[in-house]
Structure formats: C-alpha cells, structure tokens
Length: 441
Image (cartoon, rainbow, N blue to C red; front, side):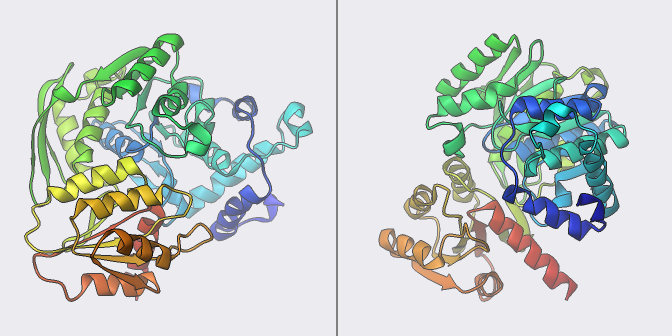
C-alpha cells in the first residue's frame, strides 16, 4: 500500500493513521529493524536526551552550540507544533517535504526486506518508531557529524534507545507525567529514564531532587556509565530583564562563563547549564570554545517555550505540574506593571486538576480565558471554567474557538498588560497554526 503514497500530505496522513493498526513493539524488534537498516547509528556521534521537562530545549541548545562550532547536526525531537517536518532538523532547518517523502519511502523499502523473524510477527513500526527510523535515514543521507536524539516518553523502552552506540546521555528535569507508563513515583520514573545509560558513556544530569539524583547515580553505576552530576550551585548571578536572562555558570572544563539567554523563561537557565555540561564531556570539546558556547546559547530559538508571539504576548507549552511550577515562577518575576491575562486549555488525560489548582493558588492573573482544544482528548471549556470559578473569584471567560479567544485576549488591553497562553503543547501548536494562517490572509 505504501508504494501508492506519493505526496507529503498522503504520507503524513498514513503516519497519523499508524496507531490505528499497530501495537507497541518490543525493544528487541526495534533493534532488529535498525540492524536491518544497516545500523547507521554506528557511523555518527550520538547525544541521547531523556527527561520529563526541558528535553527539546536542551537538544536545541546543543544543536545551536555545535552548529556555532562548525559541526553538522541532525536533531530528532517531538512532538511537533504545526508540521510533522519540525521533528527533523538538519543543521539549521527542518527537512523539506521532498526529504520527508524520501525518508518515508526509504524506510518502507527496508520493511520489504526485513528478516523473517520480524515478517512472521507481522512487524510494522509504530507511529513514533517510523518517525525515528526516518530520522536515522535522513541523518545518514546527509552524513551529519552529530545526531541529537530526544526520547519520546520514556527511556528504557523508547524506540530511540535502540541506538547502541552513544557518545553521551543526558537526563533533564524529572517530574510527574505519563505515569500510566512510567510509574507512580519520581524514583520509578527516573529509573525508566535512566534506561538510556550505556557502559563507559558519560551520563549527565542535574542534582535537583535528592531522590532522583540517588536513582540516576545508582543506575549509572549499574550500567557502568560515568555519572556527571551538575550542581545547581554552579549557577550564579541570575538576573532577568524584560527580554533576556543573564547568568553565570561554573563549568568544570571551560571555567566561569557569563551567558545571556534571549528569553524570560527562568527554567532555561537550568537547561543551558545542562547543555553546557554535555558539551564539556563530548569527545570534540577541544574544538568547541567559550565563544561558541556563548554565541550558540544566545542564538538558540525554540518555539512554544515562553515564546513572545506578539508584543507582551507569551506562549508556553507547560502541560504538567513541574512545567506549570516553572512557568508560574517565571511569571511571578516578569516585572509586569499592569494586569496579566491567561488563556488556558489542556487535554483530559493530563493532571489538569493539579495544574489548575496551581494557577488558582498563584494569584498572578487578573482574568482567565478557557477554550477547548481540537480532538477527542480535549477537556471541555465549561469544565475548565467551572473548576476555576470554584477556587477563584476571578472573571473566567469561555471562548467558542481559538480565533475569538486570541482576538479578545490580546485586544483592548492596557499598554503595560501581559497575556500568557499555556496548558498544552497541543494548544501551542494550534496557536502557531492560527498565526501562520492569519499571516497569509
């Protein structure tokens, strides 16, 4: 059937339909198919990143720094906001529709020649596996020097963990998310994430929560990995302004470095520090200078993460309790002289009650607007409004659609007022898609 698919739109639809006719495959089957592809991961230096929050940002900082140092890179991240092509970035750009089609057909061709062991099982890659295999094909085709892989939702059982050869592993902030798959405690979740560690490969993580640090350090020891624990005390002199955050980081290899990050998101300070700690443990660190680090961090852009999409209008993809805590910390220190408005939405299979409790208790917003997302997972707007009204005396407004919500929330406000849009990466994607449509009208 796949040989009849020719256009980007046809192939994108096929990939989106994959969850309807596949089951989760075993790690052994994923590894077997990667071997069927020729194990191209052995031919490229690999950085593997897992965690709950901040994975995409850390990957983006790593890519920006490596590019500044002159290395060619391939970056595979998820989810996408608007276009599925966003998941694949070669050097500085997401792949073209032509490359996307080529990668899909290349994987489809190898499915025709897979081993009998897989064929007898009726093996077919899952949604995420297929995209991962496409990324591997693209990175091999363009002969990138560094492959940066972000896990999907776990670590040990994640499709990206089929990669055998790794040069470094990193774990970002660990929090409560995807608990139905990863466990009910932070220790259980951290154990799953640490499944990406490999023998004699540096394992970099922040010493943020003692129980998580103990689990990650223990897992590194069991795997024979070299634990590189980044101390929060290495982060100093954090100063935020209307547009940027300046801070210093005490690096083991590079010494004392002063960074300027073009964001108001305080959580990016930790992500930058983790990325720098990864860089200083790479085999090519001698070719990466302090200036490469400073300029790479300054030039990084990552959509949907406290992104200013209009004058004093900020879009953030916080979608779990840890992400919301980081978001609210940033908002509390934004220096806003006027009023704050919040546009909120979530999916119903996330910790929406806990997240809304945090927003209600923060006392940071003067008005809350709610709108339902598209799709079956959407939390009804009236349910969100009723919950907020139960716990706050704030004016809470229900919007029928995102277009009217954006217009009403951003127009008619004071010059010193700020608008924040938060609650889901799906919301961030719908906002970005709306902005792109209206910019072309």
